[in-house]
Amino acid sequence: MLAVPSALWVMLAALWLALLIDVLWGEPPAWMHPVVGMGQYLAWCGRWLLTLRPVLAFNFGALSWLLGAASVGTIAWAVQTSMLRELPPVFATVLLALWLKPLLAWRMLRDEVGAVETALQQSLEAGRAQLARLVSRDVSALTESQVRESAIESLAENLNDSVVAPIFWFVLLGLPGAAVYRFANTADAMWGYRGRWEWAGKWAARLDDVLSWLPARLTALLLATVAGGLRRRRLPSLRQQARLTPSPNSGWPMAAMALALGTALHKPGVYVLNPAGRAPLAVDTLRALSYASKSVLALMLLVTLATLFIAMIEGNLA
Image (cartoon, rainbow, N blue to C red; front, side):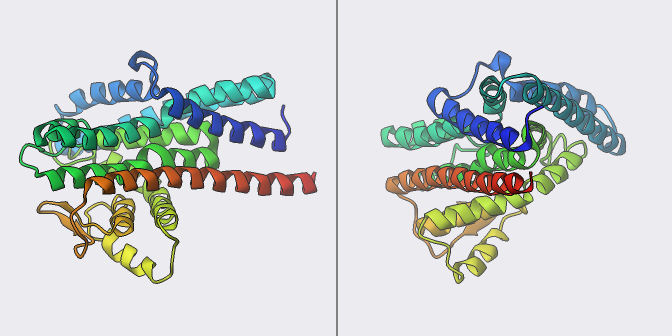
């Protein structure tokens, strides 16, 4: 079995390689995408859960979630363990990166948000149609400014869900951590909202809140830092704005982005983040994408420094 420091290097190298693969090639085909498989399992369970009374839907929804998370985590653990134990470090790094990559989705997020702005330059209708690929809300009556705001909000929120949080849990718990988080996040996206799956999705929503709590705040701190430095006087404002949203987590990266851009971000009838800010312009979408890219890089550098520190300690103890 690899020594602990060697395993750390494999994990770190696999993370960098996974992100590089994502940037260069994006998403794998749907037929081999593990997150698509998670969605198919959740959709199958969801159709059955809709036939149950509320109490049973809640209980069996929780059981279905636990079964799915346990399966995903066990498979990921078995894959990671076999790679680290049986393969030379170079092969282990490459294969682990290929398994990790589908759990990250930075390029897709960046391209989809950029495509909304490109479409807006053509027409408002084109912008609305492109935004509909990103958000679940009704886009038919949104103004140009509201379309742009929704795209920026989606960028900030999904920067956590699709990039920072999977990396966070990979660093803490390896491939099983990233896999279980993506399962939890997918379950929340499919079940964890009011409507048809309100009762079945309560467990999924709460577990996603728990697993996203620290990563969402880390995402906000990263955005605030790369946008001009994290100053003590900004923290109370960030905290205050983040609490305006119904979600205990998504408000943090969205509020950080609003404050960084100096723009207001609205969800009509629900919240207004940074109400003193101006309406976002086309250049603000580009700035938001730049801040998000810098946040991803800052996170990777932070992870690298932490790995170097841990390896140094392990080396001294050996």
